[in-house]
Length: 188
Image 1 (tube, rainbow, N blue to C red):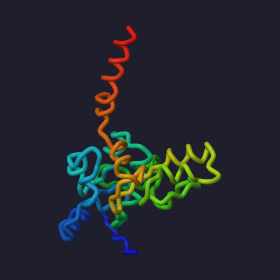
Image 2 (cartoon, helix red, strand yellow; image 1 turned 135 degrees about the vertical axis):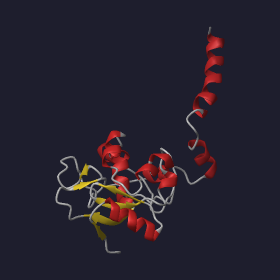
Image 3 (cartoon, rainbow, N blue to C red; image 1 turned 180 degrees about the horizontal axis):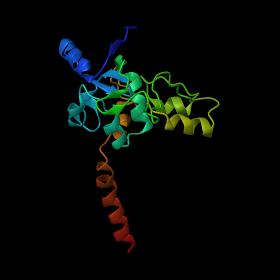
C-alpha cells in the first residue's frame, strides 16, 4: 500500500499533478487520482475536467449523484488528504466541519451475496442456494461499479445472449413497437 501524501491546499495538489502528470480531484478532504476514470465517466470528460485539481464537493452534491457514485470513490486510487488548514476550507468547500460528509473509507457492502464478477451473473444468482427476497433486494440496490481496473459486468456468459441485453435504450421501442402496432391493427 502506498503512503498517502499530505496536502495543505488545492495549490499543493495542482503542483503535485504537474510533477506526476496525473489528474486529481479533492472530495471530502481526500485527494483521488481520476486519470483513468475520466474517460469512462457516464457524464463525459467535460463534467470532470473543469474540477481537476479542485474540490468537487459542491458540484458533486449539486448533480445529486447516487450512492453508487459516492461508493465509486472507494475504487479510485487515493493519493492523499488535505490537512493543516485551520478553517478546514479547500477551494471554498468546507472539509473538516462539513456535516454532510458521509465518509468513504471503510464502507462495507452489507449484502451477503458474493458473486464472481468475471462470469455471467444471471446463472450465479439463479443457482444460488438460500437466496431470499430481502437479500436479493439488498444485493441489487448496492453498487456493482468496477473501475479499478475498469471492467464490464456481464449478465450472461454466452456472447449472443449478452449482446441481447447490452443494447441502447432506443432499441427496445424499435423492436417492440412494430409488432404492437401490427397486433393492434389486427384487433381493431
